[in-house]
Length: 77
Image (tube, rainbow, N blue to C red; front, side):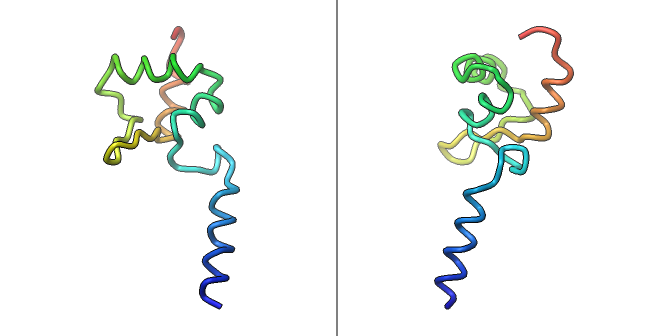
């Protein structure tokens, strides 16, 4: 029964919309913000001080709330 509960949890976890996630992949953040994935990677590469970038080992994640705030403050990308 426990295994079945884990499967249900995983299905729910995978069905979250980007606006419901705390962290996004670069691809998800690009789609969510309508900024190209290559442009977003270039921004991250050029500015290592961005507070919305999270490095988890070799994985790169975008902290959605901080990313949204940063976008709201931008006038030009």
